[in-house]
Length: 527
Image (cartoon, rainbow, N blue to C red; front, side):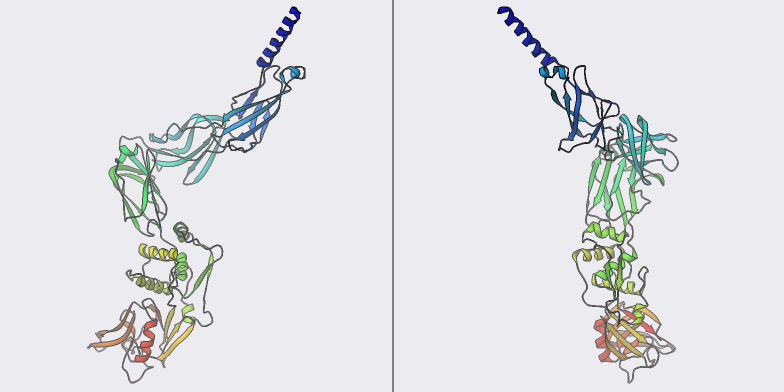
């Protein structure tokens, strides 16, 4: 009995030892695959392998010669869980179990740049180095992205530029993946400079390139920002709302807010200290950087003037309307949406007015609309579409403002009997006889916007015979072409050339016309 008990005890101990010490599957590293499955002798055979992310998303894989290969792409630095099910040998299953499950955690490899601010001697290729070999790299520069694939992994990668000639300095974005089945990492900025002792800088955009109104100004220094320019921030003129942000130890960026840099303006950035500006266009030592902000397109100007009620045409978009946000409106200024213009009163609109309109070109309708807009917004009435006009126009669009006074147009027939016709929003308001200039001082043919609008004034000048005139108390004056104007005048008759270039009207007719002819109203004189 004692001997039997000892034998049974020894068998139990042996079984327990076998159960505890039985070889088990393990997960090892692999040079190209996600991982390798190590199976010691008597461990059994791998029956199933599943992989999922921390969020529980499954990652489809293939098992090839004991290695795990993702079927799709996986992000770099992704933490994954690998679950392995092993089937034990049949002869040992009664002792150690028919199956066993093991879980492992792996992190997909990542590559770190060894340096992001490089000083490269002239004539040497610009290369970037990583802390481990790579199989996939994407280089993004001004010409677009370039993907490089390496059959043999490598740690040093050329960016395709030699540091000489027109590429003395520059910046690229670098994305990398140590494995072919990984997705490229987020791009990192890498900048290179000539090998010098002084602090150098590159800008994005380059100072010889236009600045977009809502685009950032980015300054990258060859040394740490604090050593390059100190603790003070650069100063921007004219003042633009926005924020300076340190993107990293060497890079400072200004992102404008709201409507950003005024369209068509000249922007100056004043640095706290002098640096060497090294760009493709050349280099110089300076504290002052300048850019020209891009101009708006004539098509978008017409679209916005139509939307705000300053044109005789309406505009509608072919697709989704541009959102009333600053970023969307600024994008549309540079790249106008598709759409079409239409005449809301096509049947009654004077042919003279229709004949002036040009969708894609500056024309007298545009000039008059801009002058009217400038007058309404207390701007200089010069028909120049500069930064202030674009700013005010975009602000009106964002606020949903629209001029509601309607559109007026005046056309004058110079042939006898001479007539003036006032048209407003599809209706002929008035047709009246009027007097144009005598043969020695004829009223000029053409279309002109009203540039001065006064209820009463003095008109003075020189007669054809050289004498001078001075007529005070002239009523309802609308100047439209130098000294020519629509106005009331006391005459015994109307309908024939009698003036010195103006269009004279009876008092009652002039009083009715005047409210319809604010600054910017077009006057056409024709035969």
